[in-house]
Image (cartoon, rainbow, N blue to C red):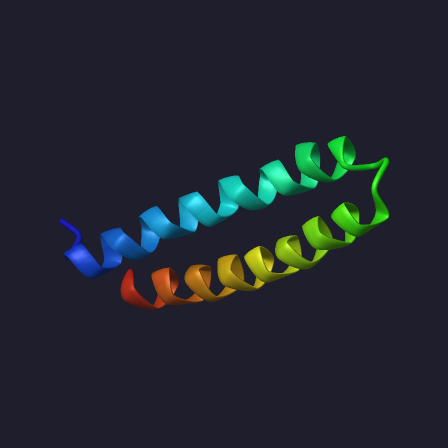
Length: 64
């Protein structure tokens, strides 16, 4: 059984991953007519990807 902290990390990893997927596959394409919006989605996506990387690292360390 997982402790609450590990579970919370895993749940946040799922949320961040889903959000990044939406930005990558939907939001950026739907904003294609607005360069400013595309740039916003790209910046936010980069942040989400950094969060996913850090969460993955932490989850792995807690599952050892």
